[in-house]
Length: 307
Image (tube, rainbow, N blue to C red):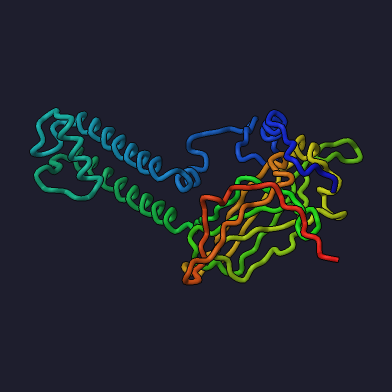
């Protein structure tokens, strides 16, 4: 594969290709009806914790404000509440929703009993839904996989090789680890139709019985590779993307962990290699330096054997 050992990727070209990346996480969908209530469960499970609790608190307050207004419509429906006091009715509604019922305020009319019963029912249902969502959020397996910011392309064992490094930040054992690398690019059919196509990139090693520290996957760019024949400028101008998918079983929780990372092909560091991050201390324990994890350097020339 012909490429210049120097990094000839220009900033403007890389930015243009990055914006046109085929597998970008940000997607603009046209012609689709969007609604706040559309796929509400997915939104609740994937939202940030701060957003989730803020939304839950807002819904709780709004429901109680609505019930306080309904109590105001009645003829003194709550005993020991000041007649027409919105704040007393609000806190009575809060007690009913939370099913605490302190006892100093209680319904004394059919209207008050009916509203309290409705409020208690909604409160119990809301508690069940919130508990289920919180459990689902906690129970979701999350892989703490750290991916290198950029792939690199350099000679390894005499062959041009695409490399991507990633690490397990928990340092626990992940069993039956598996990695897949795909190339996503636009192609044109014989009829002239433009379509997206996935190409699996063969790895020198795509499986590992245990994974606890770091792993650098390698794809040899030979005649069978979709990247064969591309120069550094071709890579810089490409709008194709690399998709790295990791999967393994967490030994601690016995759950399947998955993680992915998408790289615009224009971000490949041509003629670069990763800085070493693994070493051993005096006791023989493995030391991994995350401060250097994303660092790259110019690739070293292959050592020639003495004649």
